[in-house]
Length: 232
Image 1 (cartoon, rainbow, N blue to C red):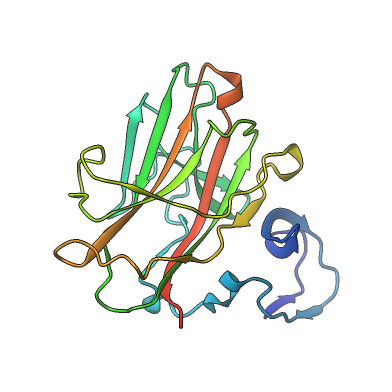
Image 2 (cartoon, rainbow, N blue to C red):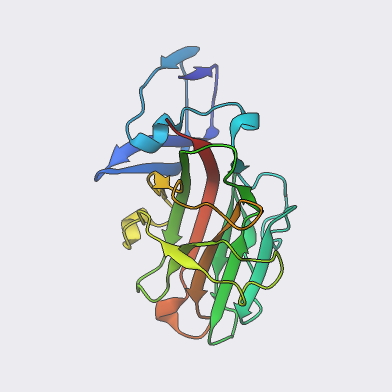
């Protein structure tokens, strides 16, 4: 349920179905009514993760702790690693919305590959773990300018390249100008088949391949609201 009470010229994150995706658009809306009440049910399965208390999330990250746009992501437990070039994942801010973003645009480097790796995620507590997150693109025109979701059970917390990583499919936004900077849902991603390492832990990673010299590969990828819960 969303309640808007005497709100004017406010930056909102608004969620609605479009082309069978769940899209989250950055919009500025003017509410002139004193009280508007909007209630809705989940319009996609990942909406029904139900927004439990944060203590109930096995992982929740909305990238809101940094107030400086363009700062490298530096979060406790997370690894921000440049495999090629020097560009790293950065803090993105649009009005009140915050997220993580990666682009090789104007880096001057032929190849930019950046990894954002999660803290260790215990798989011992629950048996039906589901992942969902929001993802957006801007000016991505080639599938080679890619974003991947990966999982590892042998990452040591330091050496990203030495670890074994498996690509996990997820729903990606369409690559067209009309949806630049629009956030789409990844869909619900089943993690319950992963038992983890000897400590029962797994690591998730977001990897982007980009370029600062090839205009067809210098688009931007953004992620937000990364969350894992036990979904019955």
